Length: 365
Image 1 (cartoon, rainbow, N blue to C red):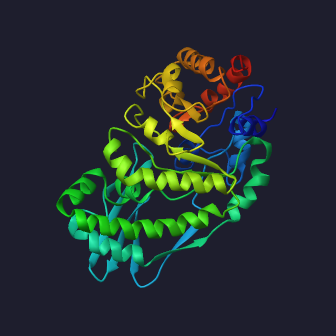
Image 2 (cartoon, rainbow, N blue to C red):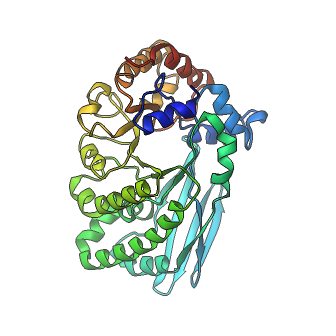
């Protein structure tokens, strides 16, 4: 069976010949590009062939299948190296964020966010109310030919409004203080964000993608049961159902600590819990994960990103992948993946080690 057939079999509650292996190489490839290490033949659309040559099934790099447009506000972006400062001028004051490029990690970090306290909520509402979305489906349509039998076509819905605040717009500290200092105004702002979020979700739902992921970036030491059940669960339950009714596969990105939240996330109805990170990096062993979620929920992940670096020997890497495969091949409810991403400084040779291990040790019991 080809990789696409394998992963579709698991998504459709069938048993393929071996465990599917699907890898998120987005972060690693970003490092290759920024460091000028990407081989010429893999530039641009060559990234799909790179997945094939490494023996990795493709599903990410995902993207949001809509464009964001603004009307009635001024949004100014100023490049700062590979990062940027964004200023939004509203009737109620200016919002400002700084996405700083971090050379050591080859990624950006928010060193300043739009929402700094409850005093910014009115301006944030104004910003949201003047933000609109347009379909951008071309890449999703093209990917069916580009990916072919080597994987899936996946796009993102936006994060839930609360998780967008936590991950991007405010950070967990500012969110917590705004909830405590101005609960009524926070709730009013949340309703505006929810309405605009739903507009973007509807556009994403109509995209050509066969798989739709909400990239929540959930980690239970940041967002526990109380916040999740009140602010996130209703959104995720609704959209997991809408995705299913549209005949598509629903994914949620849960890439942090699991024990405090994984049951609640699984109960929302997503078909796939993606980027699941087991111990020793996460807090649940590969052998115990099945006890935490319903049997018809697909667990997607298993190999922590650090295992692809030279901090782990080839022997240790092989032993861990074989250990995970011993669990994953026990039932067609698992997809072997990276938890969360292959990081910078990883070697292509290490990535390429996985496919032979899967073919040798990943046949179902």
